[in-house]
Image 1 (cartoon, one colour):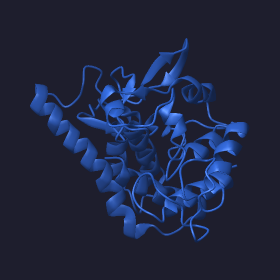
Image 2 (cartoon, rainbow, N blue to C red):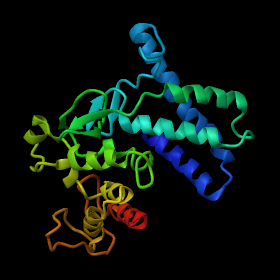
Image 3 (cartoon, rainbow, N blue to C red):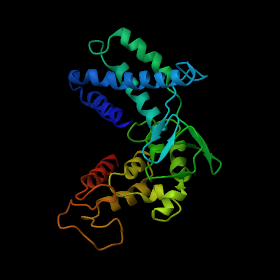
Image 4 (cartoon, rainbow, N blue to C red):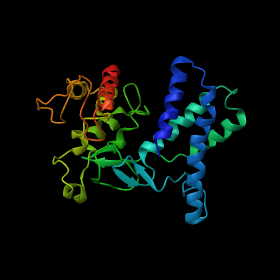
Length: 264
């Protein structure tokens, strides 16, 4: 559900950084937000006859935080909607007129808050509204508010919440994942550094220099033929990384590493 909003946010960022003409994308930028609001309002109406929850907020349910969590109001989706509506409100009136902007301003107030939970006695970002402590995959949606959506990061308020999420906000495999032979380890979400995973980018944005260096080094070590960092196995061509996810060559592996290095 978040991917379309990620593409839309990239377009907003392109315009913000370069002033590029994005007029051909305006229908998409509006519709991807309208869809989420109208669709989830419809589902909420079917549940209890109301548009919003008891606090007047949109209910994003059923929801997924990547493939790792199921629950209500995924924090990656909440962050995506917030950033996209903010982007729409910053566009000139020739693309988004005043009537539309008033609607989007109202919707911005309807977005549910990012979820939080206490771990190790400190506040961390929660992936979904419900309490979860087991995962079915090893993605890290609780740090999507850091990257790609930039709500937390260097120079942003409450950076400690994001840093504490990295330090303490990881979860364990559930029993089904263990039964499928998923690799053991106390922090599978941290260990999932290969392929397209954005850990190195997130670490750079949070200013965690030592960890960012560690993960970028793993990412960009020459032509990995194995996810085992200590392995001597190499692929024939320098950028033909292996893949734990999809297929070889895993171009996203090198791509995410280069983005992280650039962020550093």
